[in-house]
Amino acid sequence: MKIVVIDGQGGRMGSQFIERLRKAGYSGQVVAVGTNSTASAAMLRAGADAAATGENPVLVNTRDADYVVGPIGIMAADALYGEVTPAMAAAVGSCPGRKILIPVNACNYRVAGVENYSMGYLLDDAVRQIEGLGAQAGLPLA
Image 1 (cartoon, rainbow, N blue to C red):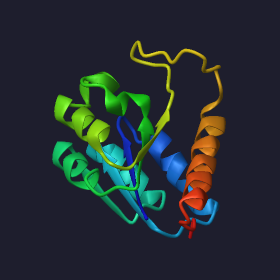
Image 2: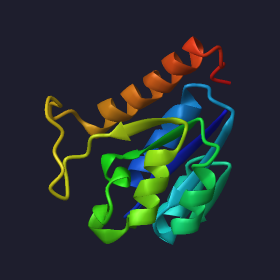
Image 3: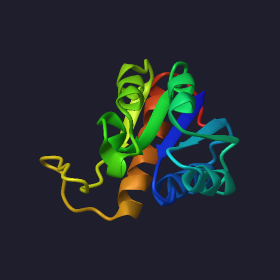
Image 4: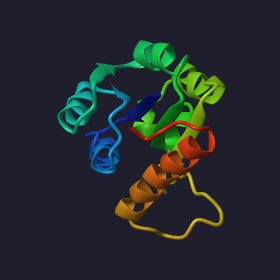
């Protein structure tokens, strides 16, 4: 199973997610793709197996991802203060894998029905969703 984590800015959300995923026992492939080198490096330090930066790594790694995880802005062109290109958003949207999107209420994107949960709660829920969906598909977390 291949999990692609996409994050920008300083990579804090992606790093925290990867740490939680590893702590939950996931030992499979995690590829971190940062919209900038700072984000990529942070996610690599957090336990990603590999990291790359920029548009092309998003295009390449989403092709065969089982899961793509990141802030909701990875589905919107020009999000993350302009770090998400239209091609990146299209690649995430057309990825055949499941998308686990963290509803970060920033950059004028709001998700109706989502309460103001802490980032920690949202990241733990993202890990639980991968565990649950993987189990339904007969895929072990490890």
